[in-house]
Amino acid sequence: MKNLDAIKQKKVEFAQKLQEAVNGGEPEQLAGVIADFADDLQDSILQEARELAQRNDSLILSQRGCRQLTDAEQNFYEATISAMRSKDPKQAISDIEIAMPETVIDSVFDDIREDHPLLGLVDFRNTMGKIKMVVNKTGVELAAWGALTEEITKEISAAIGVVDTGLMKLTAFLPVSKAMLDLGPVWLDRYVREILSEVIAASLETAIVCGDGKNQPIGMIRSVGDDVSVTGGVYPEKEAIPVKDLKPATYGGLLSKIADGPNGKSRKISNLILVVNPKDYFNKLMAWTTFRKGDGTYVNDILPYPTVIVPVTALPEGKAVLGLSKRYFAALGSTKEGKIEYDDSVRFLEDERVYAVRLYGNGQPLDDNAFLVLDISGLKAPVKEVKVVDGASE
Image 1 (cartoon, rainbow, N blue to C red):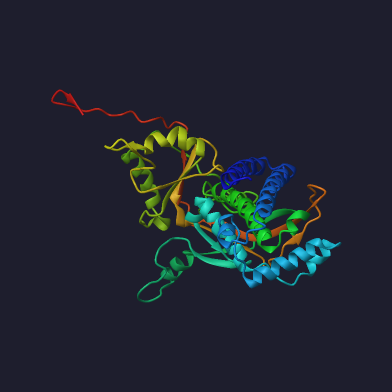
Image 2: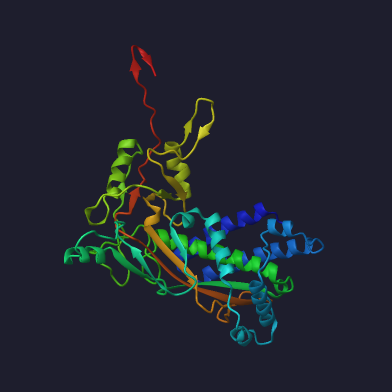
């Protein structure tokens, strides 16, 4: 039986392949990557389900990623399974009146935050639909004592922004084999959540870090200032700041740029993250952030100022992003209908039918100084400094 470690490894491989497919911009390659992962996942779930068929143990099921379904979830999956088994699944799926319960999407988002740290660090909201979110762009107090003059009114108005979460659409395909339907609602729920969480997470991480703003969120590496020139819906990339070392003086100089908030107002540095490619973490960053203690053990990820290091495959090697995680706003939610839809535009295998879940969302940095793009291609391992005091080195 495939154990949970093997499934986790499959997820890591899937995320890497999905990232490459997204960067390549080839729909066929992307569909193939999802299909391969779906086949592996379905095989694993089918095998586990058969082995546990004689043991109705809720604790074991929970350890395997299965949940105790609510009545609404149970009804939804039973209706969906019935429709998927029909001779005309496209029509039957369209006729389902029961929407995907909010708790299913909530559970997907919980899985995403647990397995993909970046999505748990930014200001990530489940909107459960296409809505407009009012956000604070400047981070200053949106209130003023005394007479509300025209100047104060303009300042407060400029600090308010609206993010339309219905502008972008993310479609996740669900290849479902006929054998999966025989397992029932609990196992189908696990499969749906696994596929959604991995596809959504990989797509969101890419968009949050590198998205160009055209039919997708605006990434951390993009400029979002009021004077930015947007061409064809694409926001320009920020100029990378060369970083040769991570000494306190160098790091402090970078943070001083972030501390200069919108409209020239200073702000507190908190919730700081450093996003790097995983290879760069081990090849360049680890030497600067790992220290040996007096007892011989090592401590990792130590920087001159409290910072969470987040390895993300979406970021190209040689680049890093330093910034305030909560100054990136992202929202994602299903439509109010929230249905699983039949999709006959994609074909994978003869014994599978393909469905889709469409979600709407958006995301962007709330100000241009919230994130810095760093060029760490020239970052070398630190040289240990030795001081000579009265003829003895220390």
